[in-house]
Structure formats: C-alpha cells, structure tokens
Image (cartoon, rainbow, N blue to C red; front, side, top):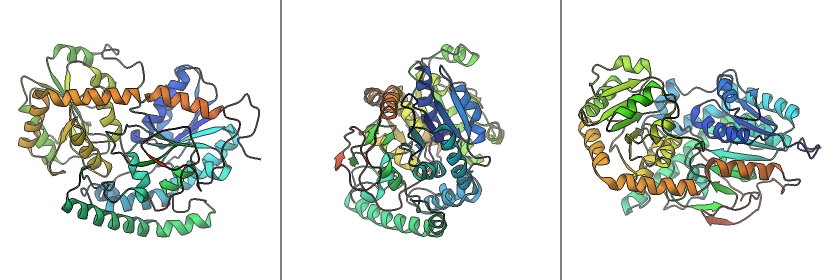
Length: 484
C-alpha cells in the first residue's frame, strides 16, 4: 500500500529543503502562507541549522520541524573555487553535481526522509531540486511531490533546450549572433560531457542502492513530479518549450510586506535619507580585499547625494581598508524585503542570485548585477535583456569606474525603474505565494493521481502553465546549482 493512502480527512503536506537560504527561502515563504491560512498538518524537513527558521514560519497553524542532515553540503574550499571561475567554465557545475551525489549528507537525508514519510504519511511533498535525498525517498515510497526550482528554470530542461537558446551558466543573452551561436553550441557540448563524467562514479553507487534516478538528473525528477514550481515569469526567464505542469509563480514574497513595519533604528535611518543604494552580495560570496576596496571606492563616489546601505559580514568588513562616509555597513538586515520596499531605496546592487533578483524586481528596483558564479551569470544577462538593470562587464573583476558609472545611470535614467516596475507587476500577476498555496491545497486534496512514471505525458508549450500532469520524459544529466 502506498504511504499516501489513509483517512481522507488527513492531508499532510511535507516540505523538504537544504538549509541554504537560496533553496530554503521560497519553501519557507509558502509554508508560512499556508500556516497563516490555518492549513493543518504542515511538516518541514530541513538541515538542523535551519530549525529556527522553520519554527519562525508558524504564523497560524503549526509548521512542525523534521530534522534533515546534521552536516549539510558546504560550498567552500575547492568547490567554491571551481564555482567562481567565471561563465562558460564547466568545472563548477561538474564539481557541484559530483558533490551533491556523493556527500554523506545525501545518504543521511535519504534515510531520515524515509523515516519522516513513514511517520507523517504525507499526501504531498514539496521538495527543493537540490535535495536529492528527499526526492529519492519520495520516489521510493511513492509519494506525489512538487519540485521547487529556485534557480533559472530552463536549467532543469538542459537536454530539451533549442540549440539557439543560451546554455545554462553561459551568461549569454537571448539574441545570439553567429559567433555567439557557435560559442553557445560548443559550451553546451562541453558542459554535457563534463556532467556525464562527473556523475559516472556516483551513478554506479546510486544504482547499487536501488535508486530509481541513479544519475540524480533534475530533468528526471521534474518529469516524475506532479508539478514544478519556478519563481519567475517568462520574459524575465527566456521562454523555452515548457511542459504543461510547469507553474511560473513570480517572486515568493509574503503578502504582508510593507516598508517600515519593523519600526527599528534602520528604518528610521532610511526614512531620513533622500536616496539610498542597497548593496547585498549574498551569503556565499567571499570578496577579496581588492574587490571590497573597489566597491567601497565606487560607492563613495555616489556621496553625499546618495547614501549606501551595504550588508556585509563582519569578517569581510574587517578586510576593508577604507569606508567612505556615505556608506553604512551592517552585518545583519532585519528584513531585506522591507529595505527593498522602502521608498528611499532607489537602486539595488546584487550578485544575481535568483531569489534576490526577483525580490528586487517585485519592488521595482533598478539593479546592478555583479555575478560571481554559475546561474548568477545567466541572471545578469536576463536583467540586462529585460531592461531592469545593468551588469558588470567582466566579473569577477570589479572596476570602480564601471561600478560608479553604471550606478549613476541606474539612479538618473528612469527607464530602468519603469521596466523593473513593469516586470514586478507581471510577477505579481503570476500569483506569487498565494497561488503557490492555492495549488498545494488543490493538489493535496486529490484522491487520485496520474501514474507518476516520467514516461509519456503532455506535449511541450512555450511557457504555458496548466493543471499538473505527469511531465514529458527527459534525458540528460541536467544541472544542479545553488542560488539566493
């Protein structure tokens, strides 16, 4: 008997994610919305270090914590170095694909989620694409699941993208010239070959474990999902032939976010400024002293007309050799969303993590994207193509003249803000967290599901969402990458 069978009155929904904010934030936002609505039987499996955030998501009915891994996968050392080599380099994705399939934490998460499923008996799971242990457990136990993809959704469907479509992590724009078409095609061949080599060893071990998706291919997980959630809209994401069960929902932003709700000292400071540039380069990036000083010099040139709020860890702040008087450095920001929503904030400097980028668009902020790894290069290209911002020309090089010049353009040319507001409106029309919660309640209430085989299913459409179906079959290794 499938673990999803049981009393019709019970509709447990179980979320599962790594603790890294890039993966965790969208699912926490959805779980909190369902809690606010009073949805019963909400459970959340996450690495131990994410426990406090799960418990804080209880806004109404309880969101119950289920332990994931004691030692989650860390992006540091050689893995971080490989990931930050620049666009159109295969080493970072290959190293990440290998790590996520061989880490001890993956096996630990698999066993724990098997136990969690036996205990909770969920009718539906919502699982982040990087949580292979939970995906394998759901597959093994026959639990229907929704696949959450917080990075550019096209990356999941690598093997199905037209050859004229920019290869994921290439950082190429949507319109490819003759030379760029060749560059793109060669990179795709190199990338697919590198991924095949990277997962060859882990695949044998995973097959010996009896796992259905031995390669850990995200496209296969997507094909077997009852729905795939992406947190963007076509137009920001480049359109591609998409399966009917793909739902693009826009940014995952709580419905109650408004500027100044916290009434803290930071809000009071923002209220007093005529113009503020907000800088946040994510939680993974570790900038060199030269990069930090280059940013500081560029930001200092904006004063005194424009003040700067720079979210920066203390360790990196200590590496700064000079801090301009118009720059306020803060290690912790109570609510990035409230900062982005504040009327005095007029531009956002980000690293191109998908969550932060789409949050910036949601609040109509012009953005300077300074990508450092993997999907960030693609987000930078999408920001420029959509007209919502500008990007560094040759990351990881940080040129003070370039940064200051591009920020002045963002602050003085109203077209960037107009385009960001336009796409923010399109993102809100996609339904956001409210639609995500509606869909999950609908899915969890079903008495029967289509056969979840990943074989056959609906045809492909150019970005059209629909009721969930078993997805089209898929081949290839796909991509696995972090985002923020």
